[in-house]
Image (cartoon, rainbow, N blue to C red; front, side, top):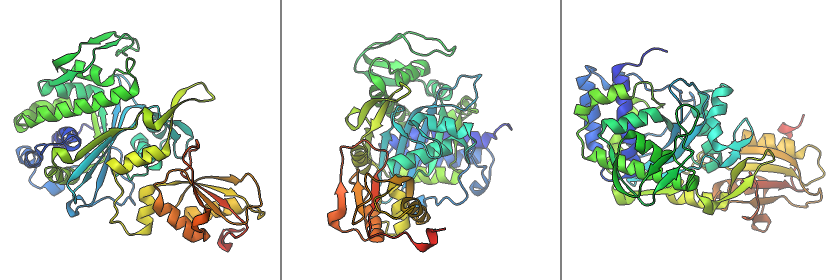
Length: 446
């Protein structure tokens, strides 16, 4: 692979630091980042920002409708961290997944950490841990690669559009922490992990004492990654703490003199599909967000159920109603969106179509029809019986209102036949049980 240009790599460093500042608050020195990018461009001898090389390694689909940040449209970014040894190449599983949002209209931001054991449908594959989405994307050569399938999987399961991704190699993370001179962390409880993975496929016992301390890159990575003492949920909280510490350190540093040192540390350890123009727009928008206007949260044990698969794997079954409520609190859907197709895309509801009538192939033909209308039909089949007089909608989440409304209009379902159930384990968000009052459109029949 061709060696990346100095300008492109320099901007990758800016993006990396922008991550910590973007998701963790303060005035987070946003304009200074914006100005630093401009100054870096001039320093590197590139006269025209519009002609900067793209950072993209995994390209955006050509038909993707990306937000106009300068015009105030919300932007969502998926942050991916991978555990890749120096001699390894992907396919890789993700060790860290975080979905961040920035709303330039309201000058607010948010961050949701996603546990890697969350057991979800992976589009085009099957149900598995969410951290395998990137692995399958690379393995099966999904368009855009592993990051693109990871984005699609998060969209599919969390009901939020994912505009961009940022992929960080943990080796690069460690080097950047060291280049910044380390970070200061207050450890609430000592960590003793005898099975922390080393770089040679073995174990390296670690001990991090309680109390406030200065961490170099190695210790910071250990603190962010260890999970055997307090589970994945405790680890998610520490990762947010690390980002806060990075933000705090970056606030106190003048980045421009650091660029010559930072550039080589990030060589080939960072990937994103953001263009330089998007980086600049994000920096400008981020400068207006205050600390108190940033929300952080984790999908934790209160909204998941421990579950053992048929293969014996310990996973987390999502409580979609509770996760949906969390998403609405931290990364709300834009109420200003009036376009029905855009609303359906935002909610990304999983629809299950079941035939409860005596019409042959009704579920299959209806599923095809709904897919053509922009609905995400995950499966179709037969209902528990075939004598339903009227079509019934079953809402398992309580927060897919646009989709419920659209389906109710299509099937002429009244309020009395819209049922809300939140205590059932299912990968669907909404079930459509077809009754005798529904006839699939003629265009879907052979």
